[in-house]
Length: 76
Figure (tube, one colour):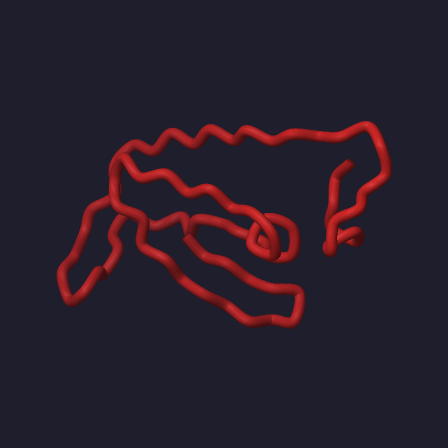
């Protein structure tokens, strides 16, 4: 998984099968995330073939105005 901040900082994270990611705070609101479309990943010197992936996203949306530290990114 690729993460990129508004300031251009990039981080790359290998997520093992059957893992879960819970993003909150700055990671949730101020970083973009994506998964590169490739079939093989190099992890710690070994090659990992990608398999079928299922992604589920759950979000809560509040009807009242945002009061968090990331008002520009908030989706309330």
